[in-house]
Image (cartoon, helix red, strand yellow):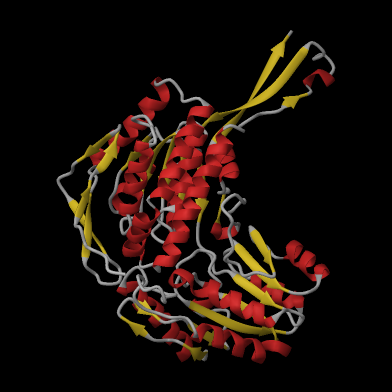
Length: 479
């Protein structure tokens, strides 16, 4: 599928205006490494202006009604689908994600926005029976949910449209104003989304977008007390820095993982191998809930490994615009080199290379390791690359313990034909989500999504994000 490089420029978006900047950054096609667009780089003055716009709009403008928020978001979802092909091409160029997967991301983003639109009409409190307390017989009470104020959304490169939608749409649905900072490597699709919201009727000041390196722009955002809530997806180290920098202000942090899957001896091995292959390597493994560790009962290890290798070796690596491609480039050659180094290190330490282990520039071929140890980087750290390890276990309690040894806890999976084992796993595996007879990399956009331990806290999913982005207020009437 030929794609023309337009070299379009995208400014910042502050208080309803597109603001040109002195400095620009080039945005590369991750497969060809050619520049296809440029993005304005925000200065400290631009950051201040964006926050001022959001703060002033929230404090002084008449609030949008819930139904008006619904109308704007619903229109934006419709516009997204109308422009699906163009938006998918941008995602493929910016991320290197196969075009067929980019189309799915646009469709999911539209659904995320539409669900948020519907939830804007459902925000509610509850009645509190204070009259049941002695001395309060003449009182009535209820709660209301009110927007927190200014939301700062900091988004990652790997899912640059849908994860922006997961932060922006619930924030707007809840009645907040927003300052958005997309990932430096993938700002163009975010700018396109801002254009769509503008065309959908979002008034000036409700959404402001700035761009630049997180080490500079992020620090300015963290230090500004006018921001009420931070919603961030990224590494645990940056998440911890945000937490430590914002004091008692609210934060929703979706951080890293090294997600595990258990394949028990009663599992459908064909199904397990196919799903693990697909969900270990999708988006070149650059997904927080990609399968990274597979714990297989020793009695079926050899059979499962053969099936997993067969499914993996069928995957096509190459040009993300080819309709046959399953796996495109990683976000940079530097990251692909890191992945290669981690695999080589594991092999030197005793791991066995089952398949893959090959790099061509920023392309890293899907890789399966076995005989890995718990202290190897490919096991204990977040690999964020198309690499998966298969480890044998003897008892389920051993498998649960191995899964839970991780410092992370986002999502996990288990394959078993036993309902009793599935329910036991749900109670014993310490993660934010458990997928039964599925790999860890499953997410429907309306479900609560978030982790424990160093995978962060707070939930995404429009209904649950709105709860995070609103405050509960008690109202008591003395009759």
